[in-house]
Image (cartoon, rainbow, N blue to C red; front, top):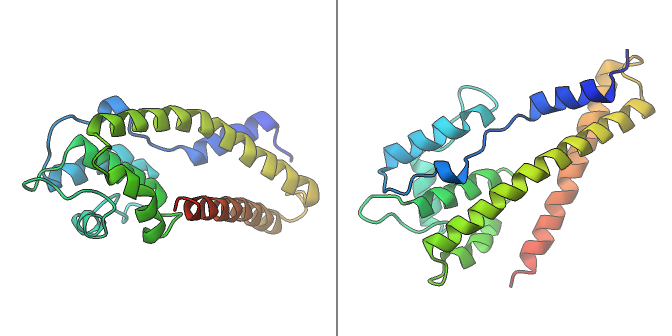
Length: 187
């Protein structure tokens, strides 16, 4: 039985459900490493695929600092600025290489980039993410509708799902390639 567009969007919305960190929720007080990992876990845990995963570990934070993806802590304390860097890294690490993230973050690590400017950038990013979420939902629903036309789920549910997954993967791959080209132009 073919799903209505309304049902399909509802199903996609449920599967895409992401936790976000609202700019106002980012504390403007210094935190120790344990507080940072707890904060990130509390706010992003629903984005994890399974319960065994960790949103962020101490080793990850140390590696991000070592690889110059974010500034080092000051006297073992992390600021709102550090949390913003960690949020950006969290979303980019599954798509981009450490080198690409490093290249993207480099201008944000400059002396001209104040914590206030970085916070304003995060506010704008968050505002745009909310709008983009609905674009993604529509794009995914359209992809599902296209695969249904090519191979109705009633014919072969497994092959239909494989085709749907492949098309979503192709979309991600294409966008990743575009991101890489844009990063290469940052020089």
